[in-house]
Each structure stands twice: as structure tokens, then as C-alpha cells.
Amino acid sequence: MEILRSFWLFIQDQVLGMKWLNAMIGKAFSAIGLDMASRLGGSIQFFLYDVIKITVLLCFLIFLISYIQSYFPPERSKRILGRFHGIGANIIAALLGTVTPFCSCSSIPLFIGFTSAGLPLGVTFSFLISSPMVDLGSLVLLMSIFGARVAIVYVMVGLVIAVIGGTMIEKMHMENYVEEFIRNACSVDIESDTLTVKDRLVYAKEQVAETFKKVFPYILAGVDIGAFIHNWIPESWIQTVLGSSNPFGVVLAVFVGVPMYADIFGTIPVAEALLAKGAQLGTILSFMMAVTTLSLPSIIMLKKAVKPKLLGLFIGICTAGIMIVGYLFNIFQYLLI
Image (tube, rainbow, N blue to C red):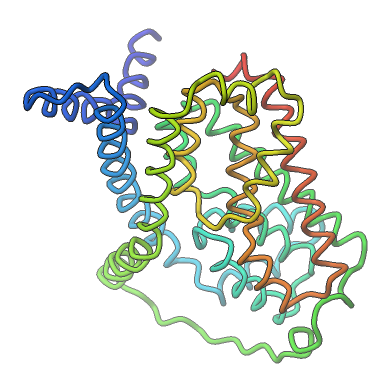
């Protein structure tokens, strides 16, 4: 058992966490005379380490997930979802969201397509909540920062929010609050060409290039913010605002996160720096969920597809779920870290 534990720690720290890279960067700059204990040296080390680590993991994960995703084009996804009913359909939709686009804005066109095809509204909302909030990439990246237990619980909780949110919307019969042009759209089934292994590999490679171009600016911005927090903001400030002494830290994190636009790859370096400075785990995860699920651009896009009452209900369910999750993670943080 101890051998397995040591092996897993090696995978988590050296393969996913790439701590060897951090040490190598520190030694390289120390060799040329830069004091890595200084704020400037620490900022440079944090920036280079996180940019390289996240970029390598990002490209690998996008390639892997895109290859899997090639087996689930929209037409096939629609047929899969159409076979299930009730809460089972919500669960499948939430799980399907884990192998689809990485940000909320790219999930909304699929949501519109599924709704136009006549799938139950609650099912499509379960997909819409799950797709940006949890995915296979977030599971691996969160493991590299917070460890396996936090990553697995985060993904499970995200799926629960997606299933509950979609089920609530389904039970409230909000179909009339979808815009007319979507409800009246004709659905056309177009069979995807049968792809060979080579075709799937080419598709995955193209997705890596396309997604990397979109995501990399947010990685740089996130790492910049993380480096600033990690090396320039006093720990006492973070603990006062986002630590256990502030019972409204979760609420503040959600309201700060909502106007931002990023995906989970851009929020992870910020979360890493906040955790190192003493912010509570639940508060950090609430911030990440708010940024990825309720970003202002995605809300503006969704407003074109649904009426204000349904949009408000979606925002309310997600906000309440994220805050509940945040407080629960804060309460049980000692069991996870």
C-alpha cells in the first residue's frame, strides 16, 4: 500500500505538478545571480513555471479530450440524450458536458442546437451548466494543484449542480421562456462521416491549435495575476478578505468572478496563489465556478436564446449552488487538504 501511495504522490507532484520544473527554473536563475527569494525572483519563477506547466498539460489534455470528443459529434450526442428520460437524461447530459467545449461561450451554440432539436429543456440546461464548469481537463489540472481528493470532489459537485439545476428547470416547465426562433427551428439530422483513426488524430491536432490560440491569452493573464498575488500581496490581506475570518468570502468571490471571462485553465494559477496565501478552499473554488459558468459574455449570449425569467432562474440556481458548494468546501477543508 505504501508503494502505491508513493507512486501516486510521484505522479501528482512530479508528472502532473511538475515540481522538478519549478526546481530547475529556480536553480537556473540562481546560477545567473538572481535572488529567487526576492519578490522579483519569485514572480519570475512563478510565471515561467506556471505558464510552461499549464501549457504542456493543456495541449496534452486538449488532444486527448478532442480525440474522445470526435466520437460524440452534435448529431450523435443528440441521439444519445434522446434515449434517456427523467433524471437519467440530466445525468447523461451533465456527463456529456465533460467532453465538450472548454468555456461557457462555446457551449451555448450546442445548447441552442440541442434545444432546437426538441430535447427537454432541463436536459439541455444540465449540459449547459456542466460543460464549462467540469471537464476531464479540469480534473487533471486540479489534481496538479490541489490533489486528487479536491479534484474529484470538485468534479462530482459540479455534476450534482448541473443535474439539480437542470431538473429544477424541467420541473418548473419553462419551455415558453425560450425564444421563438429556437423553439420553431427545424432540426435536421446530418450523419457525420465515418472517421478513421488518422482523421481523429488530425482533428485532435487541429483542436489543440485552435483552442490554444483562444485560451493562451487567458493563461498569461491568469498567471500574471497569480504571480502578483503570490509575491506582492501580503498574506494577511488575503486571509482577511478570503480567509476564515470573513464569513462573506464566498459571496465576494462569486460576485467578483461573474463579470470576468476565462476558462478553468486561466483561473487555476490565480487559485493556486490564493490558496498559498491562506484563502479558504471553498472560497477559491466558488470563484473558479463563477468565472467559468457565469461569465458576463456567456450571459449576454444566452440572453439572445432565452427570456429574462428563464435567464434569471438559471443565474439564480447556479449562484446558489456555487455558494452552497463554497461554504461546504470551507467547512470540510480539513478533510480534503
